[in-house]
Length: 124
Length: 113
Length: 155
Image 1 (cartoon, rainbow over the protein chains, first blue to last red):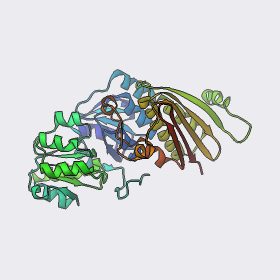
Image 2 (image 1 turned 45 degrees about the vertical axis):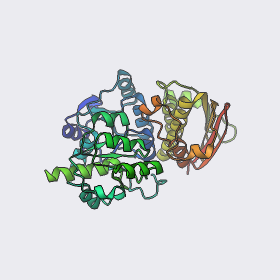
Image 3 (image 1 turned 180 degrees about the horizontal axis):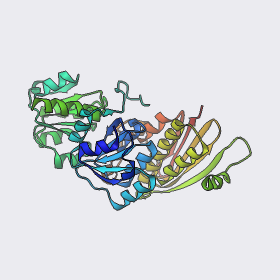
Image 4 (image 1 turned 180 degrees about the vertical axis):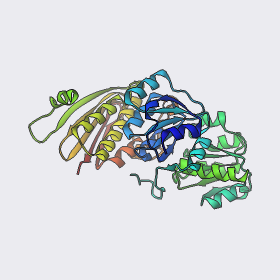
């Protein structure tokens, strides 16, 4: 689905990246621990998180994350917004908690971007 | 919906408090930052996390969560399991990532309503 | 193109080194943490390495950079790119690691509250670095510092 649809489903505000709303997204990863994102999240995925510091943007850049969805009504700092603009990473914010955000997106066809972890050293 | 139903439908491995599987789940909370879970989760929530250290048992007890599900096949630490058994807190493990597991549980609970 | 031309001044014609540079990192500087990795990723993309090699290298650099910022007084990342490899050396000055085997275990962390509140400190850093590298070497001396060397192969 397009990022625009994600915005509608989550009744989200677009903080950065209004010009990227036609971007296609299929997968999502939810986490508040950045190591997990680094270990498992795939390129082109949405990242759902409550973390608003600049490191989220750095990680999104390193991993080629499609867009960041901040949950629980979290607002990014000016520094985070500035970096997101510089690195061209969209940020949306939704009032829904991570549980509901993931639930709503999953119901509409977004899937997790990690294969089932049988062996914890597996990653793509 | 009780934990037992969720555990069966989603193939969760029950690691502790198997006699508490009739605990009613009224909502869910997905998160790994303990201060956030403390502030924002509710009684009766099923808590979905990848944190495995023993503090999760204290939080689940304090907030009266229905139980804890660890994602990405994360196993609870030994002292976590001991504490969970002592405090009678159900801990389950899923091989799914948080997004997928959350999605399934959210929709299971929504169907029930 | 201007940026690529500037980059080419770093290219060595001896051996088969496509790019070689060193990047300084300040310990404790969380607001800048990640800037070196972002830069390195851009450089590797400009060189034209395959996407997955760029990604793995960027992740290795990022985890290393965060470790330096979190635990060391200062450090540097030495990057050497050849047609077949990305070599990343990470050298820091700081507390060092008393027990490397323990530090390599997933979930083991000495992170303080500040680090945890930022979403780090899950104890996966060294494990992640190793799992994204084709070759991984680590050595450390307490109260001196830590040295890591990783090679990512570019097929």
